[in-house]
Length: 236
Image (cartoon, rainbow, N blue to C red):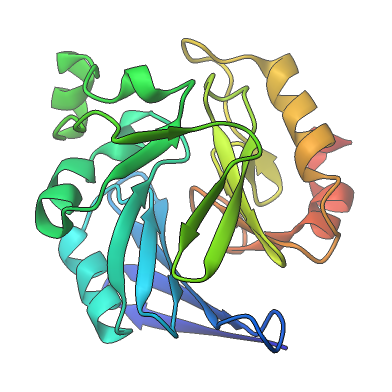
């Protein structure tokens, strides 16, 4: 059974999904938060039994993310970046300084952390990220509490772009949006790679898997794999 609710908080939108996966598996808590000027979705993913959590792409509004974690009795143990672009990593430094959580990114994008150009930092009014503490590759798992997320390497938007999967949910970063896909006109991008990643690694997931994207660019804040197969014009 999955319960879903939306909560308004200033200019933020929060999506709450609480899922009982199996009787013996702990409760999965997901919070979706729109942060910053680029409509980035940051996510808290936690185990309500242990209180341990990770944060995906803490791009901005670290105060709000930490307040949400505290409200839900969650402790942030890891910072996970779906890829290394500045609009997703700009909150890493502050989040790490306030939680001492290690930063995790796919090995293909690790070089981006700490190497953002001064022009982009000025453009976004952002701080560059500290380097990665850990890197992952396709098929690895990231475990927090008793919850494990599978790493799915989805190159295309960036060389080390990745999605994170747990039964019922996939966090798609900038690979797959609601009825759209990530851009491929950036340095290191590849349209052919991205569409191969989507078709071979994401569209093969169960149709009822909820798609939790990296930006609030769609008509709705979430979707499903089944919906994207039918209604995403870029995949027809």
